[in-house]
Amino acid sequence: MDPATLIFLAFILMLSIFLGFEVISKVPATLHTPLMSGSNAISGITLVGALVSAGAAGDDTLSIILGTAAVAFATINVVGGYLVTDRMLGMFKKKPTEVKK
Amino acid sequence: MNLDLLINLVYIAAAIMFIFGLKMLSSPATARQGNFISAIGMFLAVVITLLSKEIIDFHWIVIGFIIGAVVGAFAARLVAMTQMPEMVALFNGFGGIASLLVGWEAYHASPNSAVFTLTTIFLSVLIGGVTFSGSIVAWGKLSEVFGGKPTLFPGQKVVNALLLLAIVTAGILFILNPLGGYNIFIGIMLLALILGVMAVIPIGGADMPVVISLLNSYSGLAACAAGFVIQNNILIVAGALVGASGIILTNIMCKAMNRSLANVLFSGFGATTAGKGAAAQGEVKPIVADDAYLILEAASSVVFVPGYGLAVAQAQHVVRELGELLEQNGCEVRYAIHPVAGRMPGHMNVLLAEANVPYDQLVEMDDINPIMETVDVAVVIGANDVVNPAARTDESSPIYGMPIINVDYAKTVFVLKRSMAAGFAGIDNPLFFNENTRMLFGDAKASISGVVAAFKEK
Image 1 (cartoon, rainbow over the protein chains, first blue to last red):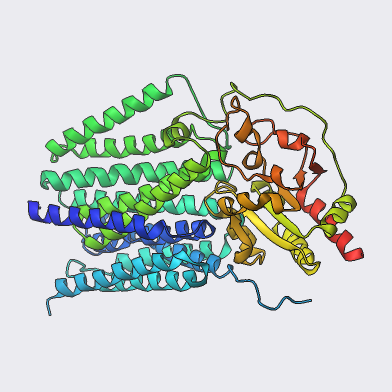
Image 2 (image 1 turned 120 degrees about the vertical axis):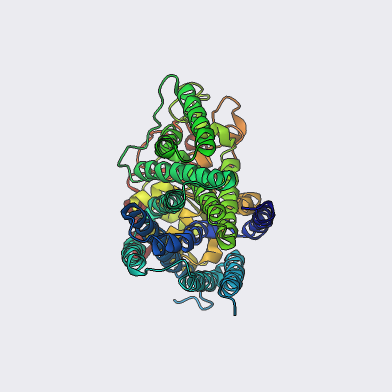
């Protein structure tokens, strides 16, 4: 990797961290559990890397095992993370304006 | 159009959607939609990646994907809300192992890489491995497979320091000599896994909110490191967002316990016997459900303060029922939630939301404390240390300085408790002996049900 790419990636990393702090510090305490399960789902982005590993594995057995396992684990995070977050957020309801007697 | 360019443009769109998704989490009203937008971003990123020309064989991708999707979907559907901390802990671990595997595969495919690439592979494997094994231990502690007690032994810090030293040495050897280094590489992975275990075993059950937050952050950093390995922007952006999120939560949890991160990670709180604080003395005033009913019936403002005991007793539904009855009686009902109540950040909020408590009734500690004096009855359910006034008054108490919900300022305090045993931190609670405190002994669910029954009879 040439130094220019490294600097470029490091720049992205630095800006993303600052952005992350700004955005996430505004999440209220009520939603901290969905925030965590949602970030589980986002960290499943490793799936993108795993797809290339599994798809380019060729005939090498170890490569196939590593790639497939990486895809499986990352997919659990993506699918499970988004679904459980959705399920949880669906439970948060506002107080009905009419109080039933 | 150039395929690489197209892929990267879609990655930019995905990054925007992740950020918007997180931004919409700033209010419960928009949060669900935000999660959906984030999921679409993920979907786009995955689909466009499948077009990349490195991918020549879809066979194994499909198999891995089906396994992951089935497991993930079932887990998401079946998990009980009380088990969310375990699930998040496991998912942190899966994020870590996925990054480790991506790093391993990158090394396996081309062992003779440049120093920089090898360094990123090393980091990806190290962070991924620590996250994975640490999360598995955290999961074991939370689900009580391993027992929640901190494991401490003499020389633990020395062992950990040596372990760290060994990893750094192995890392340098590996980077300088990649071709002869497959054994070293395997060694690094094993050491990383051991380090993860060693890092989490000294931490007690009550400190788990800090640990899962921290491991959440690590799982993001692991994705970041994997992003550097395969030089992929979207992994770096998404990983950094998750890393930042975990760090923020860790920080909030530590502040809410008035302890430094180092203290949480290394001290084995709850295992030490020194410094119990002044023993609280006096007489407790036990009451029964009917007395509680009479007081609550006359109250115009009630605050419930739930702790993990509420989840253990599965009392959230009867509590909500009582809350509704009180509201019909013209009383203002709120639920005050301490940041470290429960086993993970925001855990109590989810449990109450599941029981249909509207989120506008859930208030944070800093919002309820200034108006606590106007509250007629504060009902403490399964919480102990987070309402212990010794944190304010008794300098010898181990929790001195920790911010608490000042229930003792309310006109009357009900404490629902199984017995007079001390809380997780093993500290006496002078609240129980206060003039305005009434104890309602027994199972929280049964006690609240008793009060609800009394309400319905009249």
